[in-house]
Length: 458
Image (cartoon, rainbow, N blue to C red; front, side, top):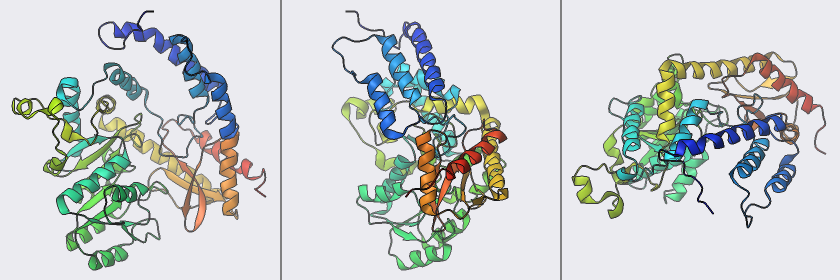
């Protein structure tokens, strides 16, 4: 039996090229068979189709590369929730750019591990360049770490605050992402103090009261783009309160952070430069394949507590001799070079290309909100700050709203999220597809309204 070819080296591209044709054909056929944003039939039907196609996952004798790729890639595509489909709009799950996906293939083929320089010479240099560039989008001397996403970034922010200030008491709004609470638990910190957010953003008077009453050390967490409504906290006012009460500030801008690239929308992040740490996530409003998160820091020396030595990776004499020390750039050891797809995207599109995409999806959200506002059968929660639009049929109960969403999912006709706001349940459309058309927005609403007439749960 011959050993299968490898992806790297001078022979790797020749081995990959015919396999890529197989994968691309399977992706096409799977999407064509699915015929919509989601496979129809619900969880049991999807699981049955996957089992029928791939039940013999570890045969005695292999089926060969072409059959395995064709069967499993096509099965996955056929059963995917495809964010490139116009009516797949539930989550902050972006359709990745083709160029970023192509770059991700190169990263997989080369397979550098970002835990020591001798495994990733060029990738480590590229990462250092990119992280400084993105950190300096916020602060003159900023830096950043690449993470798997907002959850890891938020955990790192709390960890660094703990290492610099002691067992910090986190103070955050009721709308804060759940990862902040989980990070406090994982790090052995006190349960976060939650202040009200009755309008979807942190209540400033309540925050002031909490900071007055609590004992130090404290860490205030603000949000620039909530997952439920896309709301952005009043960052300058929160930063003022942090200065008054001598509390460091972390901003979770996993959703809204890329507004920094848009001259039209950057003002929405005014005050973010007064934070000590900022979470960013480019597999949301950055159109990257997962994962592409960052934690940005105002002071690169703030990262010192992450330093760690393992003799086989960053021995002191190697570091003294000039080999870069990468272990302090992450809590993970083995990690893939997610820097490449981000760097390719930034270089290919430039600031104006990214701004065009950001402005475009904002315009889609405003257009959808206007359509809802003018529709006699629909109710709009509020006009969007980012690209999330909440709506519901007029006079519908929460049970009806939940039933509509599950019916759309089961039918495979639309993927909408759900969010609770103003004490009621809303359908949530998160618009991250820059290729949407006005027709797509109209049909999304008509499909939803058509589903609402199919009956409600008994």
